[in-house]
Image 1 (spheres, helix red, strand yellow):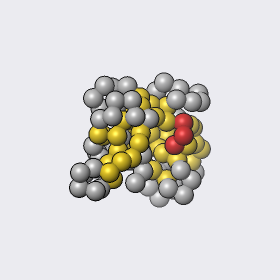
Image 2 (spheres, rainbow, N blue to C red; image 1 turned 180 degrees about the vertical axis):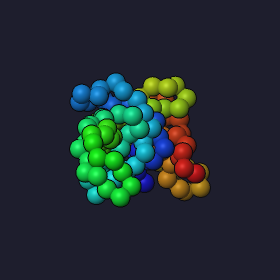
Image 3 (cartoon, one colour; image 1 turned 120 degrees about the horizontal axis):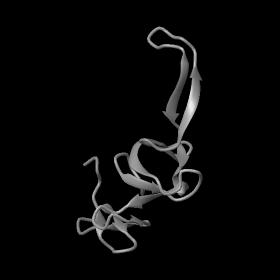
Length: 107
């Protein structure tokens, strides 16, 4: 089980985008990176293709997962995440700051 999953609200804690918040759009497992909606925008030069115009566009670049922190839904503050077993024996995410369970946004 991952501590940060697609659909979570996260805050950037390091780098030039420090302090910005957004929703995780994609989790890249191979490189442990996340793409966050509206954060870490870079300019990309695109050639003309069949369905697109040539030019310079802004795209969201991936950030390493260690540079983001999950925002707890209840308190609206960034928190570290732990994993524990619930009453049924399944893994669940919980806030290390408050001890509250964090629901999965995809379930």
